[in-house]
Structure formats: C-alpha cells, structure tokens
Length: 242
Image: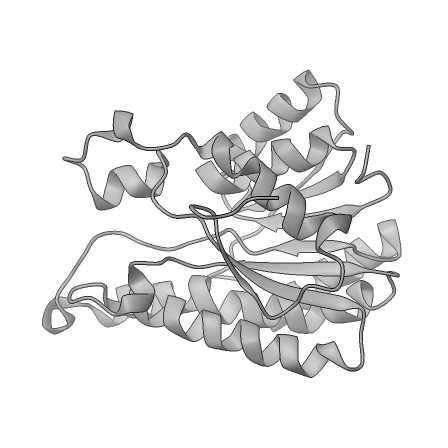
C-alpha cells in the first residue's frame, strides 16, 4: 500500500472525478477526507470506499461558494486536530452550468464560478499549507481543462477561472520549490465520460470516451511517491504514461 499513512483531502469528492480519485487513492491505503456540499453524494462515495475494504474515509460537508474565511480556518483546525499533518490536497470541485455568451452571463453565475473554481482553491491552499508543510513530502494537485485554457467563445467564467487557476498553480509551485517539500502540479483530465462532460456536451456519443476510472493512474502518480521532486508541471491524462 504505497499511500499508507497518507491523509488526502479531496474537494468535489461527491462528483465524478473527485469520487473516482477518492476510491483509487483509498484502495492504495490513503485516508481520504471527502469534502463536498451534497451529503447524499458524499455518502455514496463513502459507501464505495468502505465496500472496497479501504480505510474508512471522513465526510466533511462544505459549501465552497458559501463558506467564509472563518469556515476555511475551522476546516484547517479540525484536520490539524485529528491528523496533525496533511500529505495531499486535490482540487477537484468545479462549477459549470452551461456555455454562455458574456453578454448573457449573470453576476450571480459569474461570482459562483469564480468562487468555486478559483477563490476556493486559493483559500484552501492558504489555510492548509501549514499542515502540508509538516509532512516529509506533500502534493497539491489542481484540475484544469484543456479546452477552457484555449479561451474559446462562450466558456465564460469557467474558462476564465481555469486559465487563472493554472497561473496560480505555477506561481505557488515557484514559491514553494525552494523552501518546501510540497510539490504543486496541475492535471488535465481530458474528455472522459463524466457528469460534467455530459452537461457540457449532451449530444456527444459518450461511448467513445474513456471511463473516469482511466484517470486512476494519473491521480496515483501525482499524489503518490512516484511524483516526489516533480513540481510546476501540467500533466495531460491523454498522454500520461508511468
């Protein structure tokens, strides 16, 4: 079990990719903190992990968009009190409703997307860095989107947030590289048969897409010991090979 004694917090853990990552990492011995705002989805992932005879995860209901700074600080305090340190942080939560022209994007939708996709990763990194720095080696993994980073029309706040998120990841990697054992990388999942993909491209033939489980090896690499020393990289799952 290469991830024994690893505590990994996953945002959006009730979603397709977050749940996939949680199960894959738990099967390798990791203690997973499942963070999502929807309790039924958290419970479903929890049940899948327990059924796999993996370490029992922790469910932490949390609304990334609605939480204030004190809520984030309380989260960090609770994780610190229970585990003392943190070995992994996977930003998998995402806010996307549909492709929309900028002229028709509401202030509410814009703010919601920026809050979940950009502000929340910043706040989580800031409050959890002290726990990550207590580990001999720790990994932060951001999730981006190869299509959004090309800044296509109608990608709106989702596209803006992903472009900014990749920049933030590189800045953080640069800052931590010389002074910390924390590595920071970004995963591009590519097109997979996920709930988000179904919402974005409802007419697409999903049978032609890889299953979400095909990303397991990329998650294990980025959050496991094989990627120690690798930081500031963007890993495209479509071309990823161990």
